[in-house]
Length: 157
Image 1 (cartoon, rainbow, N blue to C red):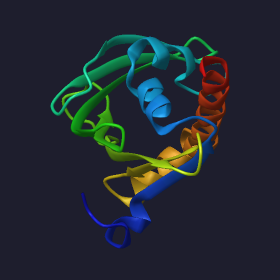
Image 2: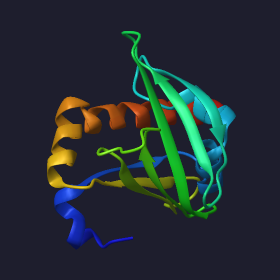
Image 3: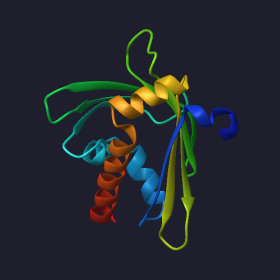
Image 4: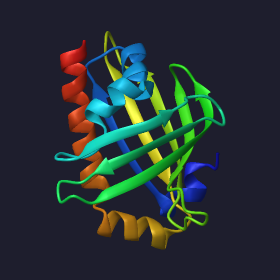
């Protein structure tokens, strides 16, 4: 992966401490039955078609927006280090996806039964990052997804 300093103008980074063990947070992030319950911003639902969390494995899903729009997604995992880190490319099934981006998710213990999850997205250019942030409200929607994840973890723990 490229370093933060070399990619800072192309990054979006979200980080939050969750009230759950690192193992639980990792499991809830990588188990398709759990992901379908919390993935996406408020009002969205997610249909998981496949989730194979291993290097080269695919995660295909559709996010259903409240307005009825469907957003097909495809993730290709590159690195899977339970329960520490995931790296993957997130995009669509399009043959050429100019908006696809690389992601690193880290899971770091912070005291007893707390985990800092950091989601670092690196886009192909600063223009693409700015477009995604502006048009898809990526930071706000990401924070809503983290809110839903925290709610899920409270009910799961």
